[in-house]
Image 1 (cartoon, rainbow, N blue to C red):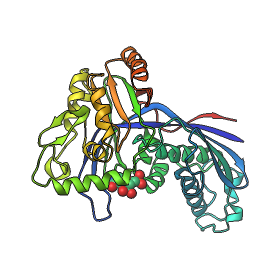
Image 2: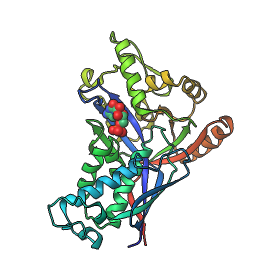
Image 3: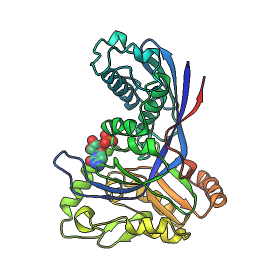
Length: 346
Ligand code: C5P
C-alpha cells in the first residue's frame, strides 16, 4: 500500500456545560458533540521520514507542533513499544524490533509524508486540529499496518487532545471528563447547519481562562448568556456543581422529532467568555437573531452554528447570509456525520 486517504469531521457542541477547573487545569465538561460532514482530508504516502504539508491554511505550522505530526509520532512510539505482533502488521512494522521491547532506534521507525487539505475553519471551535490528529492516526494505522483497534486509537487520541477521541468516533455522543469520555447517542433526524466563520480564530485556552475570570466575577449567580443571544437566567458557570445531569433535557429532545425542543435545550457555557474576548460576535449574533431555529457558538468559538429547519432552508439561508455578511465565510454542513474514516487506498 502506497497511499491512504482519510476524511475527518468537524464538530459542533449542541450543549457545552463547563465546571470549575480541576487540579490539572482542565475543566470538567458535560457536552453533546455532533460530527458534521465538513471534512478535512488527510492523505499519507510512504516515505523515509515523517513530514507534513498543509493545503488551504497558509498560516498553520507544518512542523512537529502540529497535532497531526504529534499524532504520527505518538502512533509510531506506541507501535514501536508493543513490537510488530499486531494483527495485519506489514513489513515496516515488523522492522520495529522484538515484541514487547521498546524500539528506540529512530532509524528503524517508518516514515510517511502527510498532506492535510483543510476545510474545517482554523481555531474556529470546530475541532479542526483534533480532526487532523484523528485523521493522521487512522491513516497511518492503515499505511503502516499497525492493526490498532478503535479503542486503542481513542486512548492514544485522548493523550493528544480532549476532542480527538470524538473526531475518531464521530456521529453524536455525550462527552464527559475533559470531553474524552464518550457515550454514543442517537437522534431522530439529520440536522442541517449553516456555519458563520470568522477570519480571525480564538484560542481555546484563552476562552477557558476568560470563563474562569467571569465565573470568579459572578459567584453570586447572575445571568449567563445562552444560545442565540438569548439569556438563560440562573445558568450557572459551574453546572458540574449545580446540576447533576446538565444535558439530560437535550438528550431527551434529540430522540424526539421536534427541532424547537432541541433548540430550547442548546446552550454553550463558553459563549459569554468568547463574546467577552470578541465583542464583534455579539453583532453577528444580532444580525442572525431570526435565522434558523437556533444559533449557538461552536465550542470555544468564534464559529457560530445556525440550526436550520431542513436542508432546503439551510441552503437558502446560507446564500442569503453570504450576501449580507460578505466579510464572513458562510459554510453549509449536515450532521451527524461519520468519524475519521478511510476514504481511499492505493
Ligand atoms: O485538550 P486540548 O489540548 O484540546 O485542550 C486545549 C486547552 O483547552 C487546554 O490546554 C485547556 O487550557 C483548555 N481545556 C480545558 N478544559 C477542557 C478542555 C480544554 O480547560 N475540558
